[in-house]
Image 1: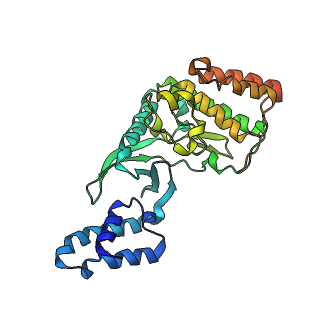
Image 2: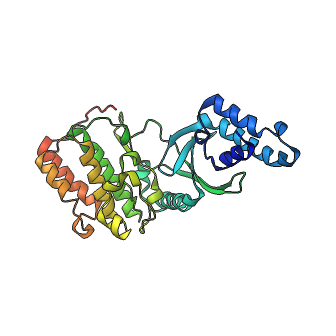
Image 3: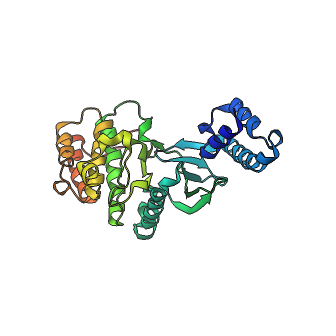
Length: 297
């Protein structure tokens, strides 16, 4: 690999995976940009590139997950560092920080487990002087995303997720915060404790700045056509998600879901906590008093 090409690729990489996989990739780039193997004129550039390569390589095993716009890395203290792959998404990272801070400042404290705690948010400048907004988040131990489900589930199992999702949304909406992207990968569950947490609040704006393109069909018309979102948007998307993970909803639950899925947001429920009461009535009529059902992924 030529020196200029290696420098360019290292400069554009957000993680080591952008360069390749394993020792072979590292040796290829290290050989191309090592300060001892270049001309005097290239020395300063090589030193910066080699330092950047070394950092990417050191951090390769710290990556926990790859999100829509950012990578999640393990911090030295066990926290999660959420780092956007492109500086162009700094505004979305800032939107998440604002949303999580609003939940902490304005939301009822007893519902805080429904979202990760924002520890810190700061700007990081890399070797190419590109600035990225990094959000440091509390790590939620034992939680897994609904995207890990490989089969549809009994509606009785989906019911507890649906209920807790409405609790979390009601808490956010009362604090003046809309999530804006209730999707499989953004809803975490704790199977053993029946816990639910909403993550990736980057899309939390009344005027929609971005959507998850691969999930375009999950969004309601107001997002796709008018770029707006409100509480009814979250309710529509939460209902769609429950429909996707449930195996054959009984007619009463199907009717309930249909009432949350009208094209026009003004025709949908606007209050998640009031809707929770209606859902409980439907569930009680179908299954009787609530009982704990073990849930595994």
